Length: 189
Image (cartoon, helix red, strand yellow):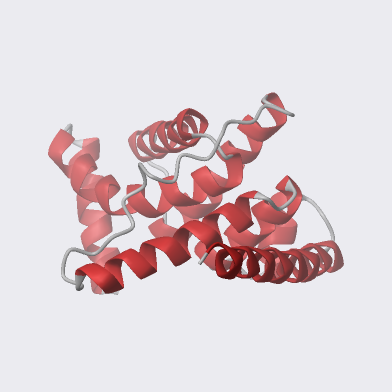
């Protein structure tokens, strides 16, 4: 409730022309949005485009006086729509995964723990990126944006059973891919 009140106050400030208010409202949304868009699109430039498009639409909606009750949920859906738009436009367009440039370390952890966590994160990200696009999308919406099955179905204009099936098959394939990468790691060591 307190968060929503602060968000409403920032939106009012934005409508009055306060650019810092938009920065304060949008900045907390960007890291999660970028990670999700990157997972869905497998491309840094396309992920940046999706986030930028969503931010532009957020700003435009606020300036038009749209009442946004739950900003995080609304923005998550908006981002998912923009990423799906880009996916449709760029069908078949793929980039190599640039894991080294993604900041997944926490400076407060010990170096060994940090290295192990980075290695595990890389395996997980590579495995997620190996999934089919329709599986990656539902996985991102379900786990990263924490949307419910019904919300994902409505967002993608598919049946709830299709969402459940894609999630199920994505989990099975992800488990297999992670198991394979773990086995490959053991062979190397």
